[in-house]
Image (cartoon, rainbow, N blue to C red; front, side, top):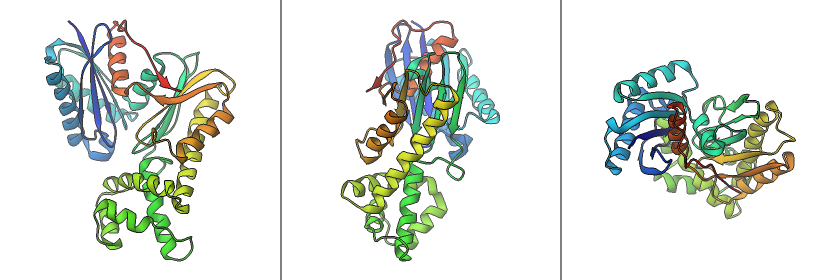
Length: 316
């Protein structure tokens, strides 16, 4: 039996999926983050190897049974990043066809295969990517936490801390986010929080995201404003790609992926409403198929053996 291995790596975790020749998922694995621009190449390579090894062990498989490997990583849109990751994969899987691309491409593969569609990703970072019927592609966002990533878990957490600071300075309405954030992070006071942010912002701001969700559900004004702003930013991000591809009046699939979604919150409701209003013929939903499966399917296609059972899905 021949198998195809796919990896999807970001700033929070790395997922791996192995497909057989029929397109059936036979095993999976999970490891830590593997965005080289956030965690460095050494840690990224360790996570990729760990996720792949776990998937192979779970499937009682050996690397020699793999025909192709595809890794879709946040940060791999930069040629120097993609080339270093490709070299690592070639050494790790010397008998396989290997391919490195972005997390955007493998997510779009999971959503629509090689057909037209748009994916909106919001996890640790945020970005959008799409393709039209002519095969033209476009992307927006994905510039990192200090230049973009609006609407991401990082951005929402950062905005929550800013809201607390502004409330302390009496230039914004009072909010209970301060105590809730400290409790969630297990920190004693504001000074400890600012020191943690200075030491490792990536390990702080995304962890505040669930606090903002809970606070908004409880009616906190600052938290609700943060989520509404995030929804607007994500709608704008998706809209950039849709319009560049000439899909605004067309029928197409618009899939949302990433940890910011699936929570049935104020953010989700507002985002869906805005997107549906701007693109009434779009089928909008949450991606049901893991991007790692999309990566494995792309590996199979590049190897000239598209699995017979390949299907794509979005929750409406």
